[in-house]
Image (cartoon, rainbow, N blue to C red; front, side, top):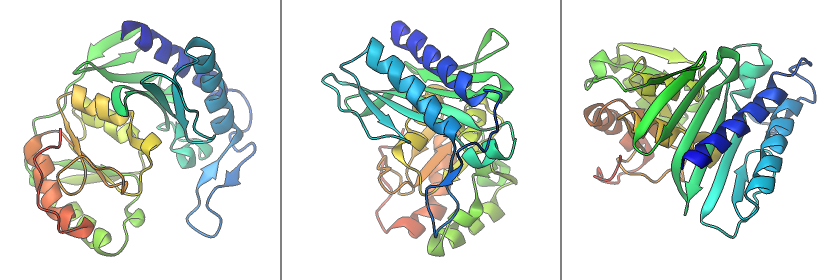
Amino acid sequence: MPDFFAFARELSVAARRETLRDVSITSGLEDKNPGGPFDPVSNADREAERAMRDLIVEAFPDHGILGEEFDNRAGASAYQWSLDPIDGTRSYISGLPTWTTLIALMENGRPIMGLIDAPCLDELYVGFHETSWKEAAGVRTPIRVSKVGELGEARLATTDPLLFKGNAAAAFKTLYGATRITRFGYDAYAYARLASGTIDLVVECELKPHDYQALIPVVRGAGGTFGDWSGGTDFSAGQVIGAATRELYVAAVEVMRAAASSVPLAKDAD
């Protein structure tokens, strides 16, 4: 694992070279969802993922690759790399600093190491082997979730409340009203702050695997809970809850579960 971590840091550095390159941040901008909500992709997204893929193929030719911008690459080993070159492209093209690069190492389909890199802030959040830390200005600091267990004390975050539709929108509105404060627009960076103890609860919908696979080891390694809206760990619907404590997670599930399904509360969320 230490060798894999050193390599993952190389991937993040390669991605930074592309995303922080001194060119127009809207270069090659396209909409991946014409006719629906604007889903941007830029040249920086493509070039950063291409740079990471090239390194993986060279160093670990038997590893699989799951990326956002290009087709998946099958591998012969148990390991796969999950890549999201720019999580928060809307923030990126708006010149806001909280977009991130997400990198996860998967073993037999399970994320065992995750990196959340915030290049503009020069912050790297890492989770693996039941521990998480932050690296900034060359200093490594252990991170830990807060101890908040009640909705009334919670600091809630989500990317965009308008992404919730129908019953889910009503459920999120209830959750919003029950928490102390809510912040919008931080994408994966909200989970980095959850792991660091300054956000207590993150609820999202419509996430793809590359959106959440790197987040799981970071949140869980910091002592947090990461599960779906029904109390389990089936993320196939893209419905995700990250919480500082098990108690807070269960409280959020009680609000969101009815919007997802009538499945009884499970016991297997971590």
